[in-house]
Image (tube, rainbow, N blue to C red; front, side, top):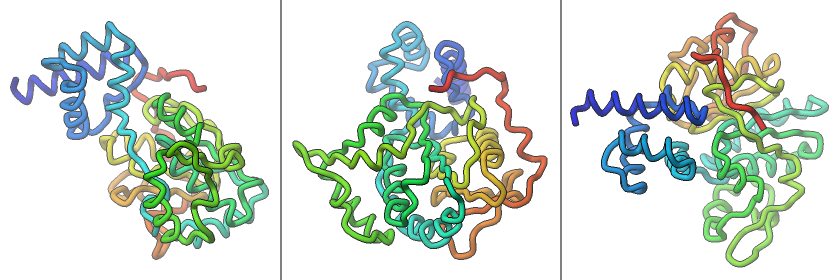
Length: 292
């Protein structure tokens, strides 16, 4: 197949998924989609994209397997420790001035980042009066996140990240070990609301003081990146904070003037005065999946 034909088939597949299952991947990065779909063809034993399309339209279970491939469920605790150190130093002191801080972790995957944030807030005396919303479109990832149970072999690296991020104790203080798995404390999970939300189709649902959306925008094309930034702009309170991934930025988007980078901080931004830019984030078709 030619590249032109392959891209046409890719677009047809994403349109069919959107219409059948209301998951909108149409504005995800094409290079990322191609990589993921090559994996999907192998794992689901399909000869080409039309065959894959027929399979997932006929079999919801097959679509569930494809969803795990398309949503890139990869994360870790205290990823990029310098970011969490900067968050503790520059953002937490401001959050302490609010009676009940509200935080949104968008694209939370299996929950490690939301748990990392909960630990930081606990150590800073903020967790009990904070509310964390952690959202994703992958129901299997959300179920894992809500359990807070992870393979024990990951804890050595996570513990090193925690210390490098300015942790005040040992990560092992926050979980118990059962059958080669680490079970994180319920007091942390109780402060996190895990829910379905799509940056492609859904709207703002809460006012927040801090939003973390790290290593998610890199999988979007420019249209969807700006839609997501519009959602974040509208959700953040006056002078609220936005944290992005190491390869992500508000620069070269129409929201560049709406967020100022924190001096010396790692991909942390603060919302400037309101602008008209954020009123243009609506999806192309105006339909959305129901939120849980």
